[in-house]
Length: 200
Image (cartoon, rainbow, N blue to C red; front, side, top):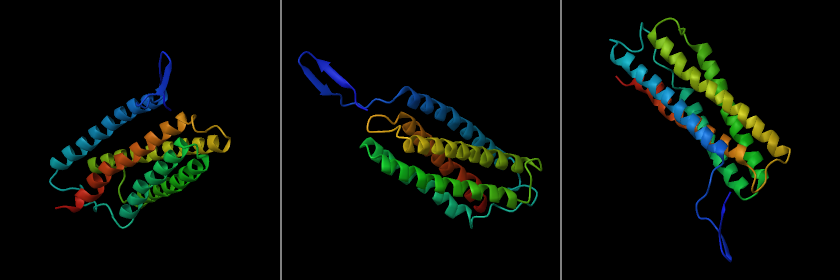
């Protein structure tokens, strides 16, 4: 959405793109949530540094057979979002619908994998410090994915109801920002919790 700069006898588009208030509200929320994950990851590495073995009590290191491909599925889910965003900026609602739907399927498959991973673990969140921090970080991220999928459904409904066009898609922009954040967080969580225990 481009504002107009008006001077006597001249009207020309401004070169700087402005964002709606809701977008800035989401940006502030994301900064807050990012700090929560930074603190949790710092706690993870503190516990690891203070322990003689990691994971604790003979717990096996996280399995990568499914974690790696599903991580790429989640990261890849941002690509259709970029595609959808470019489409709606040009008034292409069909691209918005398709891109958001594809991203939903990819995000839902990652969430299903996370729930499967929790069910397959041989330790609980109350067993030791490792279990507690693992379930907290991965579980919190899964919660964010779940919320993002809920937002995705709302965006799809609004698109199918004709609420979006070339100049009206503020709520979609808010969702785009949130989903990219969810993917970015996993870029930090996956190497820390899944890859680093394999490095001796």
